[in-house]
Figure 1 (cartoon, rainbow, N blue to C red):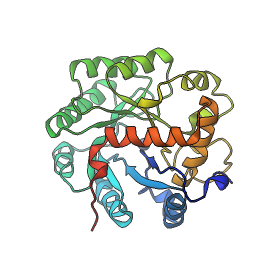
Figure 2: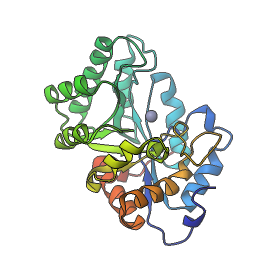
Figure 3: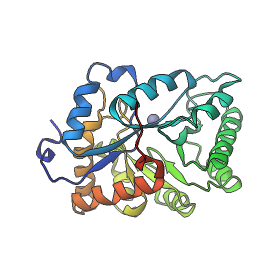
Length: 268
Ligand SMILES: [Zn+2]
């Protein structure tokens, strides 16, 4: 089991900056995994949105545990003509800290032009509301970077689940964006990504599980879980040859800077 050595008092607090805690795959174990994550030092958890129909469930789960949400229209999910208006309402919900996740995916979802239009509208909402953005991007870095140059993000954001080249990382970082790092690097065949990740500036990295997706390589079955994050962080600290405490402290600081509203309390 991962994280066993890390469950001790005095460990640096950490944040899971991207966890779909509301997804039904986590229903059975949700309370247990949140308790385990808290015991291991979890201070905040951000539940990203994917579609309007899920937003009430997301808000409920966030309220139950005192966590926060982002709301956005993810390219994998179908969206109705009124969903942008409804998203705008949800962005005013207490506990909302960002727009997302939204983005571009060449491997899944509707035609890219359609995805670009939906993303443009959401970037505009983020600009109006002064909210940071959580970006999902698969094989569409050039169109995304073009869009971001045209529509800069005044409140910044994060490219979540990033695992691109050093050059791509440099271009996102130059735009002031952060990179969300999950367990993808723990796979033995991720050598090239590991080499890039070892050299990225710690000040612009956020930790995320993306649970229930993307479990670490040492876990054979079941969904990914937020309480796996300390072990993922430990593996990252080893890869980067830096103390785990520094990595947890800096990524937490960066996450709170990226999502300033995370500091605000909410809940029912
Ligand atoms: Zn996600």
